[in-house]
Structure formats: structure tokens, C-alpha cells
Amino acid sequence: MTILVVEDEELINKMLQMALRPIGLEVVFAHNVPEAFNILEQALPDVIVMDIHLPGSKGWELLDALRDDPATQDIPVIVLTAHVDLDNQQTAMLKGVSEFLSKPVLPDVLREAVLKVLNH
Image (cartoon, rainbow, N blue to C red; front, side, top):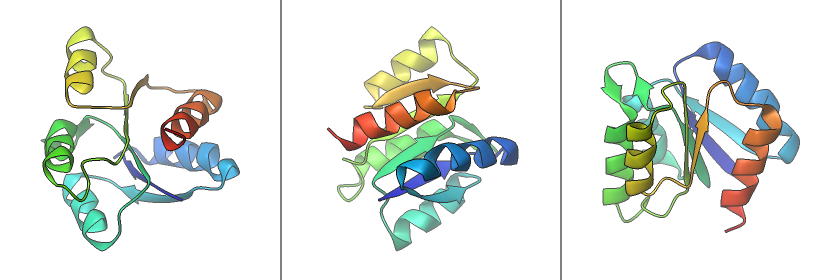
């Protein structure tokens, strides 16, 4: 199984990779929305973990595009952000996000969220 991580901070990417490898996921990284689209054109992941504040655009644009495309609309998305407020949480839920996690996230919490959405 493959997970696409859309995150621009390299330190967080390293932590996410260390957290997700033990559960047997192949982790692919995109540092911005255009990179994410390039990866999605080549292969579809089983789950996406993404920040909502990315360089040059907001993650909501990526999420809207995912939900509008029949090929990607059912891929579970976990939002991982430092911008945890009621507006972002409500927007995420309205856009069909499976989980909304705050940074920094404990590895066990992330693994549990990923396994939960993969088993639905």
C-alpha cells in the first residue's frame, strides 16, 4: 500500500516516514500541490496525508481537485496541520476529510489514523 504525503517541511517528512514505515506502507512525498498532481498522474495512492498550508497554494485546492476527479474522489485524506482551529476543522469535514490531526503528531496517533482510514 502507498501513502502520499504532501508536506513542505523536510523534518516533518522524515518523522512521518519513520512513523509509517513500520506498518508496511510505501511513502511517497510531494512538497507542494504541483508535485502532488504530478505524482497522482502517475499512480494513485491508497491514502493521502497532507498539510493545508503549502508553498504557493493552500491544500484546500488540492483537496477540491481530488474530490472533483472520479479517479481520486474516494482516496481517504488525512489533514495534518499546525493550523488547528474551528474554521479549518469544519472546512476539512465539509470537504470529506477522513481525519484531522494537529502538528506535531505522535507517531502512534498517525499510525492509528492511517490504519483506521485504510480499514474502512
